[in-house]
Image 1 (cartoon, helix red, strand yellow):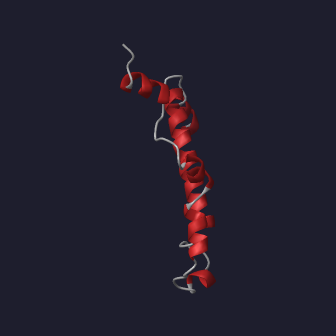
Image 2: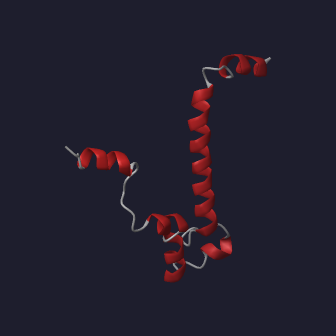
Length: 93
């Protein structure tokens, strides 16, 4: 009974466009949480690691901060659509 009411209320064609951004956001959030828990040098999940206190491990912190996406973007101009930006900033009369 409860699942039938849920289906009637939320699973409609009007709701499908809302599902795409919500699934995307939940996926990105999950990816970032898993990345932080597994690779962040400041996050310690187990009792043994948390008892270690503050570690002076700069190499691991550098590796975490300079991830692949940051290396890919580094040195590029911060533009989303360069052709549109060039069209409006450099008009040819």
